[in-house]
Figure 1 (spheres, rainbow, N blue to C red):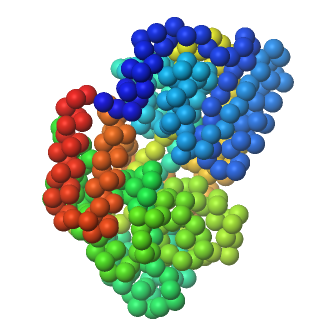
Figure 2 (figure 1 turned 180 degrees about the vertical axis):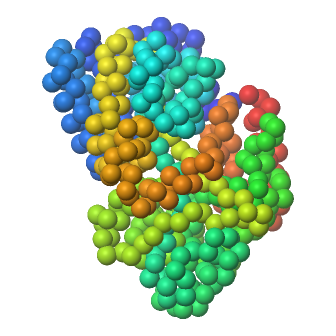
Figure 3 (figure 1 turned 120 degrees about the vertical axis):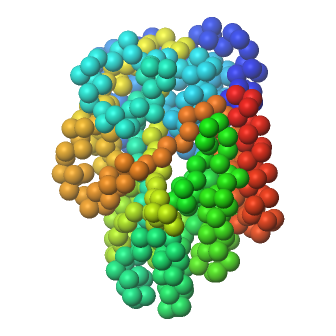
Length: 410
């Protein structure tokens, strides 16, 4: 049983009968905080919308990402949720199953749907119905410190993991106190950082309804990462570093590489303008397999909203090309709007071109019940491997068995 299911059972079957907390004419919106610019953007968008739509007020609440899932679960259980909310698209299936989000098809017109790049809209389509709109989209690639690699004799990171490890060893040998490979091992997306290697070795997270963690590809991928750790090619204590921590190490010049999303480019330009960096695809595995993580976050409308028409009008407004350009420029996300993608801010950006080039190979988190529990089980096993708290194969096979139990219950 997922965390969502437990919360909804606790709330009881009368959840959707509870009245929404919003006053007539007020649309409450829960926003995930991506950066310091998130709140100001949505405040300005709300003011612009209100000026064009007298009688409707937009109430914005910005919540840190680490707290968002728990807050939504608590609010939904109490019938106190907002009318609209940003969510991780990977949570959407649980919401759809529980009937707490409403399909948007009655509002969506063909011209509105045509605004979107289908790659980013499709993860929010379930059973032929559109349950969310892609508010944020990204893929993953490898950022590298050009100066560090040049000192070791490389113009860019090698294209395969085997050659990359050789390069990492040369970087370590050159001294300077820079760790070659920045590795995440804490909090959200710890499992994803491992999937980069898993996919490149030909593995799958879930295949034919079964976990792929017990496969030879999964074992080989874990051995690869553990080899980086044991060889002193990563920062010490990787399980103490979340995504933001590793990104900060890169911005500070303390690690030579980090795998992350497009938004790091904007952070570097503001916080470390003298850092000489580049962006490259994630290295390929021994058979040439290469993958990246495609991510969307969605904004959804809750079923118990009493102001659905007003809420939709606000969605329509923030998904205009003008608003999408403003938002993605601030946050450093990939365009989800086809017209937006033609803007020189995105079309001519060398970093974004790398991310766009890897999109055809992007993998998304499986849209399956219990995904959050599955991801946590994977992360727990991976952390134990990184810490040396057991042998790789038994740890992964035990995790796979536990995941299979979760899959069989849903």
